[in-house]
View (tube, rainbow, N blue to C red):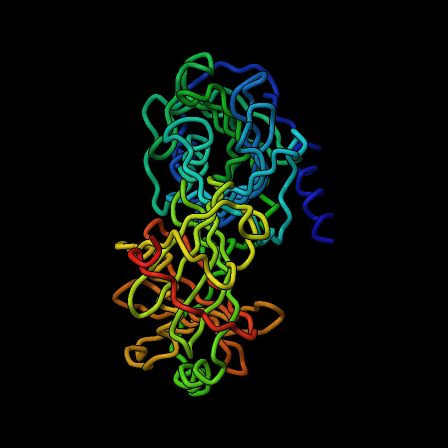
Length: 444
Protein backbone atom coordinates (compact mmCIF):
# COMPACT_ATOMS: atom_id res chain seq x y z
CA UNK A 1 0.00 0.00 0.00
CA UNK A 2 2.82 2.42 0.91
CA UNK A 3 4.55 1.63 -2.39
CA UNK A 4 1.36 2.47 -4.27
CA UNK A 5 1.13 5.80 -2.44
CA UNK A 6 4.71 6.61 -3.42
CA UNK A 7 4.06 5.77 -7.08
CA UNK A 8 0.95 7.96 -7.12
CA UNK A 9 2.97 10.76 -5.55
CA UNK A 10 5.46 10.60 -8.42
CA UNK A 11 2.69 10.61 -11.02
CA UNK A 12 1.02 13.61 -9.45
CA UNK A 13 4.15 15.68 -10.02
CA UNK A 14 4.21 15.12 -13.76
CA UNK A 15 0.70 14.32 -14.94
CA UNK A 16 -2.08 16.81 -15.59
CA UNK A 17 -0.08 19.93 -14.78
CA UNK A 18 0.41 22.81 -17.20
CA UNK A 19 3.52 24.91 -16.59
CA UNK A 20 3.54 26.91 -19.81
CA UNK A 21 2.18 30.48 -19.78
CA UNK A 22 -1.41 30.78 -20.97
CA UNK A 23 -0.43 33.50 -23.43
CA UNK A 24 2.43 35.87 -24.11
CA UNK A 25 2.27 38.99 -21.96
CA UNK A 26 4.38 42.06 -21.51
CA UNK A 27 6.27 42.06 -18.17
CA UNK A 28 5.00 44.65 -15.73
CA UNK A 29 5.56 45.77 -12.17
CA UNK A 30 3.69 43.88 -9.45
CA UNK A 31 0.39 45.11 -8.10
CA UNK A 32 0.05 45.58 -4.35
CA UNK A 33 -1.74 42.23 -4.00
CA UNK A 34 0.93 40.43 -6.02
CA UNK A 35 3.69 41.96 -3.88
CA UNK A 36 1.90 40.80 -0.73
CA UNK A 37 1.59 37.24 -2.07
CA UNK A 38 5.24 37.10 -3.11
CA UNK A 39 6.27 38.45 0.30
CA UNK A 40 4.11 35.79 1.99
CA UNK A 41 5.31 32.87 -0.17
CA UNK A 42 8.00 31.58 2.22
CA UNK A 43 5.73 31.98 5.26
CA UNK A 44 2.99 30.06 3.43
CA UNK A 45 5.42 27.20 2.79
CA UNK A 46 6.39 27.18 6.45
CA UNK A 47 2.75 27.12 7.59
CA UNK A 48 1.74 24.47 5.05
CA UNK A 49 4.42 22.24 6.66
CA UNK A 50 5.15 19.83 3.79
CA UNK A 51 4.96 19.27 0.04
CA UNK A 52 6.01 16.77 -2.58
CA UNK A 53 9.04 17.93 -4.55
CA UNK A 54 10.87 17.18 -7.78
CA UNK A 55 14.09 19.15 -8.26
CA UNK A 56 16.04 18.94 -11.51
CA UNK A 57 19.53 20.47 -11.55
CA UNK A 58 21.90 20.78 -14.49
CA UNK A 59 21.53 19.48 -18.02
CA UNK A 60 22.59 16.53 -20.15
CA UNK A 61 24.97 14.03 -18.58
CA UNK A 62 25.39 16.29 -15.54
CA UNK A 63 21.65 16.38 -14.73
CA UNK A 64 20.68 15.34 -11.19
CA UNK A 65 17.09 14.74 -10.10
CA UNK A 66 15.74 14.76 -6.54
CA UNK A 67 12.27 13.32 -5.94
CA UNK A 68 10.48 13.04 -2.61
CA UNK A 69 9.25 15.44 0.06
CA UNK A 70 10.26 18.53 1.96
CA UNK A 71 9.05 19.31 5.48
CA UNK A 72 9.76 22.99 6.12
CA UNK A 73 8.35 22.98 9.65
CA UNK A 74 10.93 20.49 11.01
CA UNK A 75 12.94 21.15 8.72
CA UNK A 76 13.71 17.90 6.87
CA UNK A 77 13.92 16.59 3.31
CA UNK A 78 13.57 12.94 2.27
CA UNK A 79 14.56 12.33 -1.34
CA UNK A 80 15.58 9.79 -3.94
CA UNK A 81 18.70 11.05 -5.74
CA UNK A 82 18.98 10.01 -9.38
CA UNK A 83 19.63 11.21 -12.89
CA UNK A 84 22.75 10.69 -15.03
CA UNK A 85 24.80 13.16 -12.95
CA UNK A 86 24.06 11.64 -9.54
CA UNK A 87 27.27 9.58 -9.45
CA UNK A 88 28.22 8.29 -6.00
CA UNK A 89 25.31 10.23 -4.47
CA UNK A 90 22.72 8.04 -6.20
CA UNK A 91 20.38 6.55 -3.60
CA UNK A 92 18.19 7.76 -0.74
CA UNK A 93 18.84 10.95 1.19
CA UNK A 94 17.56 12.57 4.36
CA UNK A 95 18.85 15.98 5.36
CA UNK A 96 18.38 18.92 7.69
CA UNK A 97 19.91 22.35 7.04
CA UNK A 98 23.05 21.24 8.93
CA UNK A 99 23.37 17.51 8.22
CA UNK A 100 23.05 15.12 5.26
CA UNK A 101 22.47 11.37 5.59
CA UNK A 102 22.92 9.31 2.43
CA UNK A 103 22.05 5.68 1.71
CA UNK A 104 24.08 5.07 -1.46
CA UNK A 105 22.75 2.64 -4.05
CA UNK A 106 24.99 2.58 -7.15
CA UNK A 107 22.78 -0.14 -8.68
CA UNK A 108 19.61 1.98 -8.58
CA UNK A 109 17.97 2.86 -11.89
CA UNK A 110 18.90 6.36 -13.14
CA UNK A 111 15.30 7.62 -13.02
CA UNK A 112 14.38 8.47 -9.41
CA UNK A 113 11.02 7.76 -7.80
CA UNK A 114 9.59 8.85 -4.42
CA UNK A 115 11.30 7.01 -1.56
CA UNK A 116 9.43 4.42 0.53
CA UNK A 117 7.39 6.22 3.18
CA UNK A 118 9.00 4.05 5.86
CA UNK A 119 12.72 4.55 5.24
CA UNK A 120 15.05 1.53 5.32
CA UNK A 121 16.82 1.19 8.66
CA UNK A 122 20.25 0.19 7.39
CA UNK A 123 23.20 1.57 5.36
CA UNK A 124 22.73 5.26 6.21
CA UNK A 125 25.90 7.29 6.51
CA UNK A 126 26.86 10.91 7.11
CA UNK A 127 27.67 12.73 3.88
CA UNK A 128 29.37 16.08 3.36
CA UNK A 129 28.59 17.42 -0.13
CA UNK A 130 30.76 20.40 -1.19
CA UNK A 131 29.15 23.61 0.09
CA UNK A 132 27.43 25.79 -2.50
CA UNK A 133 27.72 23.25 -5.30
CA UNK A 134 25.72 20.33 -6.69
CA UNK A 135 23.61 18.55 -4.11
CA UNK A 136 24.37 21.02 -1.31
CA UNK A 137 23.19 23.97 -3.42
CA UNK A 138 19.93 22.20 -4.27
CA UNK A 139 19.25 21.40 -0.61
CA UNK A 140 20.01 24.99 0.40
CA UNK A 141 17.49 26.15 -2.18
CA UNK A 142 14.75 23.83 -0.88
CA UNK A 143 15.27 24.84 2.74
CA UNK A 144 15.47 28.50 1.73
CA UNK A 145 11.93 28.39 0.33
CA UNK A 146 10.42 28.71 3.82
CA UNK A 147 10.64 31.26 6.62
CA UNK A 148 8.65 32.13 9.72
CA UNK A 149 8.22 35.78 8.73
CA UNK A 150 7.54 37.62 5.44
CA UNK A 151 10.12 39.66 3.58
CA UNK A 152 9.23 42.39 1.08
CA UNK A 153 10.07 41.50 -2.54
CA UNK A 154 12.71 43.54 -4.34
CA UNK A 155 11.59 46.49 -6.45
CA UNK A 156 12.86 44.63 -9.51
CA UNK A 157 10.14 41.95 -9.17
CA UNK A 158 7.89 41.64 -12.24
CA UNK A 159 4.83 39.69 -13.40
CA UNK A 160 5.66 38.07 -16.73
CA UNK A 161 2.53 35.99 -17.35
CA UNK A 162 -0.05 33.54 -16.11
CA UNK A 163 -0.54 29.76 -16.26
CA UNK A 164 -2.58 26.96 -14.72
CA UNK A 165 -1.49 24.13 -12.43
CA UNK A 166 -4.20 21.52 -12.81
CA UNK A 167 -7.28 23.69 -12.39
CA UNK A 168 -5.47 26.31 -10.29
CA UNK A 169 -4.58 29.64 -11.94
CA UNK A 170 -1.13 30.96 -11.08
CA UNK A 171 0.89 34.08 -11.76
CA UNK A 172 4.42 33.76 -13.11
CA UNK A 173 6.52 36.27 -11.18
CA UNK A 174 10.16 37.13 -11.60
CA UNK A 175 12.20 38.26 -8.59
CA UNK A 176 15.57 37.78 -6.87
CA UNK A 177 16.20 34.37 -5.27
CA UNK A 178 14.55 33.49 -1.96
CA UNK A 179 16.41 32.93 1.26
CA UNK A 180 20.10 32.64 2.06
CA UNK A 181 22.50 30.64 -0.04
CA UNK A 182 20.78 30.96 -3.43
CA UNK A 183 22.26 32.81 -6.37
CA UNK A 184 20.96 33.48 -9.84
CA UNK A 185 23.39 33.43 -12.76
CA UNK A 186 21.69 34.29 -16.05
CA UNK A 187 19.82 31.14 -16.96
CA UNK A 188 16.42 32.81 -17.38
CA UNK A 189 16.79 35.53 -20.02
CA UNK A 190 17.18 38.37 -17.49
CA UNK A 191 18.94 36.37 -14.81
CA UNK A 192 16.21 36.19 -12.12
CA UNK A 193 14.20 33.21 -10.83
CA UNK A 194 10.62 32.67 -11.92
CA UNK A 195 7.91 31.67 -9.46
CA UNK A 196 4.58 30.01 -10.32
CA UNK A 197 2.49 31.41 -7.45
CA UNK A 198 -1.24 30.90 -6.90
CA UNK A 199 -3.71 33.36 -5.36
CA UNK A 200 -3.18 31.86 -1.87
CA UNK A 201 0.57 32.57 -2.00
CA UNK A 202 1.40 28.88 -2.57
CA UNK A 203 4.41 28.17 -4.76
CA UNK A 204 3.97 25.46 -7.41
CA UNK A 205 7.09 25.81 -9.52
CA UNK A 206 10.41 27.63 -9.43
CA UNK A 207 12.91 28.08 -12.25
CA UNK A 208 16.32 29.52 -11.46
CA UNK A 209 20.03 28.81 -11.84
CA UNK A 210 22.67 28.13 -9.21
CA UNK A 211 26.40 28.74 -9.33
CA UNK A 212 28.30 25.54 -10.06
CA UNK A 213 25.05 23.75 -10.94
CA UNK A 214 23.37 25.51 -13.85
CA UNK A 215 19.61 25.67 -14.48
CA UNK A 216 17.40 24.36 -11.69
CA UNK A 217 13.67 23.59 -11.72
CA UNK A 218 11.67 22.86 -8.58
CA UNK A 219 8.14 21.45 -8.89
CA UNK A 220 5.99 21.25 -5.74
CA UNK A 221 2.91 19.10 -5.23
CA UNK A 222 0.90 20.93 -2.58
CA UNK A 223 -1.44 17.96 -1.94
CA UNK A 224 1.28 15.34 -1.43
CA UNK A 225 2.04 15.90 2.26
CA UNK A 226 2.81 12.68 4.17
CA UNK A 227 4.35 12.87 7.63
CA UNK A 228 8.06 12.16 7.23
CA UNK A 229 9.95 9.72 9.44
CA UNK A 230 13.54 10.74 10.20
CA UNK A 231 16.01 7.86 10.24
CA UNK A 232 17.63 6.83 13.52
CA UNK A 233 20.80 8.82 12.85
CA UNK A 234 18.63 11.98 12.79
CA UNK A 235 16.97 11.06 16.07
CA UNK A 236 14.00 9.08 14.78
CA UNK A 237 10.37 10.10 15.00
CA UNK A 238 9.70 13.39 16.80
CA UNK A 239 7.88 13.11 20.08
CA UNK A 240 6.48 15.29 22.82
CA UNK A 241 9.04 15.26 25.67
CA UNK A 242 7.53 15.10 29.15
CA UNK A 243 8.45 14.15 32.68
CA UNK A 244 8.52 10.46 33.52
CA UNK A 245 5.50 8.78 35.03
CA UNK A 246 5.90 6.89 38.31
CA UNK A 247 6.11 3.59 36.41
CA UNK A 248 8.69 4.94 33.95
CA UNK A 249 10.76 6.40 36.78
CA UNK A 250 10.64 3.08 38.56
CA UNK A 251 11.93 1.21 35.51
CA UNK A 252 14.78 3.70 35.10
CA UNK A 253 15.76 3.52 38.77
CA UNK A 254 15.73 -0.29 38.76
CA UNK A 255 17.73 -0.50 35.54
CA UNK A 256 21.23 -0.75 37.12
CA UNK A 257 20.23 -3.69 39.31
CA UNK A 258 18.59 -5.44 36.33
CA UNK A 259 21.72 -5.04 34.22
CA UNK A 260 23.97 -6.37 36.95
CA UNK A 261 21.66 -9.34 37.41
CA UNK A 262 21.67 -10.06 33.70
CA UNK A 263 25.46 -9.97 33.61
CA UNK A 264 25.94 -8.79 30.03
CA UNK A 265 24.59 -8.51 26.49
CA UNK A 266 25.56 -8.85 22.86
CA UNK A 267 25.81 -5.44 21.21
CA UNK A 268 25.49 -4.05 17.69
CA UNK A 269 26.90 -0.63 16.91
CA UNK A 270 25.90 2.01 14.35
CA UNK A 271 27.86 5.24 14.76
CA UNK A 272 27.84 8.02 12.13
CA UNK A 273 30.56 10.05 13.85
CA UNK A 274 31.62 12.21 10.89
CA UNK A 275 31.29 12.30 7.11
CA UNK A 276 34.56 10.36 6.83
CA UNK A 277 33.95 8.18 9.90
CA UNK A 278 30.87 5.99 9.67
CA UNK A 279 31.33 3.05 12.02
CA UNK A 280 29.65 -0.32 12.39
CA UNK A 281 30.42 -2.89 15.05
CA UNK A 282 29.41 -5.87 17.15
CA UNK A 283 30.61 -7.61 20.28
CA UNK A 284 29.72 -7.81 23.95
CA UNK A 285 29.23 -5.72 27.05
CA UNK A 286 29.83 -7.43 30.39
CA UNK A 287 28.36 -5.67 33.40
CA UNK A 288 29.62 -8.36 35.75
CA UNK A 289 33.14 -8.03 34.32
CA UNK A 290 32.82 -4.26 33.75
CA UNK A 291 34.28 -4.57 30.27
CA UNK A 292 33.30 -4.23 26.61
CA UNK A 293 34.92 -6.01 23.66
CA UNK A 294 33.84 -5.13 20.12
CA UNK A 295 34.82 -5.30 16.47
CA UNK A 296 34.59 -1.94 14.72
CA UNK A 297 34.48 -1.40 10.94
CA UNK A 298 34.80 1.93 9.15
CA UNK A 299 32.76 2.05 5.93
CA UNK A 300 35.58 3.98 4.22
CA UNK A 301 38.24 1.42 5.23
CA UNK A 302 36.66 -1.89 4.18
CA UNK A 303 39.87 -3.96 4.36
CA UNK A 304 40.61 -3.29 8.05
CA UNK A 305 38.90 -3.90 11.38
CA UNK A 306 39.59 -2.43 14.80
CA UNK A 307 39.26 -4.54 17.95
CA UNK A 308 38.40 -2.46 21.00
CA UNK A 309 38.59 -3.51 24.64
CA UNK A 310 37.19 -0.99 27.16
CA UNK A 311 37.26 -1.40 30.94
CA UNK A 312 38.06 0.52 34.09
CA UNK A 313 41.74 0.82 33.14
CA UNK A 314 41.11 2.49 29.80
CA UNK A 315 40.70 1.54 26.15
CA UNK A 316 43.03 -0.68 24.15
CA UNK A 317 42.84 -1.29 20.44
CA UNK A 318 44.30 -3.61 17.85
CA UNK A 319 44.15 -3.16 14.07
CA UNK A 320 43.61 -6.40 12.14
CA UNK A 321 42.87 -7.39 8.51
CA UNK A 322 39.17 -7.66 7.65
CA UNK A 323 39.58 -11.38 6.98
CA UNK A 324 40.44 -11.89 10.66
CA UNK A 325 36.79 -11.22 11.59
CA UNK A 326 33.68 -12.70 9.91
CA UNK A 327 30.99 -10.55 8.34
CA UNK A 328 31.02 -7.52 6.05
CA UNK A 329 32.07 -3.91 6.54
CA UNK A 330 28.38 -3.00 6.94
CA UNK A 331 27.76 -5.85 9.40
CA UNK A 332 31.03 -7.03 10.96
CA UNK A 333 31.13 -10.15 13.09
CA UNK A 334 32.02 -10.32 16.77
CA UNK A 335 35.69 -10.12 17.77
CA UNK A 336 37.82 -13.26 18.04
CA UNK A 337 38.11 -15.23 21.28
CA UNK A 338 40.54 -15.40 22.84
CA UNK A 339 41.77 -11.94 21.83
CA UNK A 340 44.90 -11.77 19.68
CA UNK A 341 48.03 -12.04 21.78
CA UNK A 342 49.84 -9.21 20.02
CA UNK A 343 49.20 -5.85 18.42
CA UNK A 344 47.38 -4.14 21.28
CA UNK A 345 48.11 -0.55 22.22
CA UNK A 346 46.61 1.89 24.67
CA UNK A 347 44.31 4.51 23.16
CA UNK A 348 44.88 7.89 24.85
CA UNK A 349 41.74 9.23 23.15
CA UNK A 350 39.69 6.40 24.69
CA UNK A 351 38.14 5.68 21.24
CA UNK A 352 36.58 9.16 21.07
CA UNK A 353 32.80 9.28 20.94
CA UNK A 354 32.62 5.52 20.42
CA UNK A 355 34.41 5.14 23.75
CA UNK A 356 31.89 7.50 25.34
CA UNK A 357 29.06 5.27 24.10
CA UNK A 358 30.70 2.07 25.38
CA UNK A 359 31.51 3.73 28.69
CA UNK A 360 27.89 4.88 29.00
CA UNK A 361 26.75 1.28 28.45
CA UNK A 362 29.01 0.09 31.28
CA UNK A 363 28.00 2.95 33.58
CA UNK A 364 24.31 2.14 33.02
CA UNK A 365 24.78 -0.67 35.54
CA UNK A 366 26.10 1.78 38.15
CA UNK A 367 24.46 4.28 40.48
CA UNK A 368 21.29 5.90 39.09
CA UNK A 369 22.40 9.28 40.42
CA UNK A 370 22.04 12.31 38.14
CA UNK A 371 18.93 11.00 36.40
CA UNK A 372 16.48 13.35 38.07
CA UNK A 373 16.09 15.51 34.95
CA UNK A 374 15.32 12.55 32.67
CA UNK A 375 12.56 13.09 30.08
CA UNK A 376 10.49 10.62 28.12
CA UNK A 377 10.99 11.69 24.50
CA UNK A 378 8.50 9.28 22.90
CA UNK A 379 7.34 5.71 22.65
CA UNK A 380 8.96 3.51 20.01
CA UNK A 381 9.79 -0.11 19.26
CA UNK A 382 12.98 -2.08 18.72
CA UNK A 383 13.47 -5.81 18.13
CA UNK A 384 9.70 -6.25 18.35
CA UNK A 385 9.53 -4.69 21.83
CA UNK A 386 7.62 -1.55 22.82
CA UNK A 387 9.96 0.88 24.53
CA UNK A 388 10.03 4.26 26.23
CA UNK A 389 12.82 6.48 24.89
CA UNK A 390 14.23 8.31 27.91
CA UNK A 391 16.66 11.19 27.42
CA UNK A 392 19.33 12.23 29.91
CA UNK A 393 21.70 15.18 29.72
CA UNK A 394 25.08 14.10 31.09
CA UNK A 395 28.49 15.83 31.37
CA UNK A 396 29.72 13.66 28.48
CA UNK A 397 26.82 14.19 26.13
CA UNK A 398 23.12 13.71 25.48
CA UNK A 399 22.09 10.08 26.03
CA UNK A 400 18.89 8.17 25.30
CA UNK A 401 17.90 4.93 26.99
CA UNK A 402 15.43 2.68 25.18
CA UNK A 403 13.77 0.75 28.01
CA UNK A 404 11.07 -1.84 27.31
CA UNK A 405 8.00 -2.30 29.50
CA UNK A 406 9.68 -5.21 31.31
CA UNK A 407 12.48 -2.85 32.35
CA UNK A 408 15.19 -4.18 29.99
CA UNK A 409 17.59 -1.80 28.22
CA UNK A 410 17.25 -2.40 24.47
CA UNK A 411 19.24 0.48 23.00
CA UNK A 412 21.57 3.23 24.12
CA UNK A 413 22.01 6.34 21.97
CA UNK A 414 24.56 9.15 22.08
CA UNK A 415 24.32 12.43 20.21
CA UNK A 416 27.66 13.01 18.52
CA UNK A 417 29.43 16.33 17.96
CA UNK A 418 28.29 16.15 14.31
CA UNK A 419 24.68 16.23 15.57
CA UNK A 420 23.86 12.67 14.52
CA UNK A 421 22.79 9.89 16.88
CA UNK A 422 24.96 6.80 17.40
CA UNK A 423 23.19 3.60 18.52
CA UNK A 424 24.29 0.65 20.60
CA UNK A 425 21.64 -2.09 20.41
CA UNK A 426 21.70 -4.64 23.25
CA UNK A 427 20.43 -8.20 22.90
CA UNK A 428 20.14 -10.70 25.77
CA UNK A 429 22.91 -13.26 25.30
CA UNK A 430 25.39 -15.43 27.16
CA UNK A 431 28.52 -13.29 27.30
CA UNK A 432 31.88 -15.05 27.25
CA UNK A 433 34.51 -14.21 29.81
CA UNK A 434 36.19 -11.14 28.42
CA UNK A 435 39.86 -11.69 29.23
CA UNK A 436 41.93 -8.51 29.39
CA UNK A 437 43.83 -7.45 26.28
CA UNK A 438 47.58 -7.46 26.79
CA UNK A 439 49.27 -4.21 27.65
CA UNK A 440 51.49 -2.68 24.97
CA UNK A 441 54.61 -3.90 26.76
CA UNK A 442 53.28 -7.45 27.13
CA UNK A 443 52.02 -7.50 23.53
CA UNK A 444 55.46 -6.96 21.99
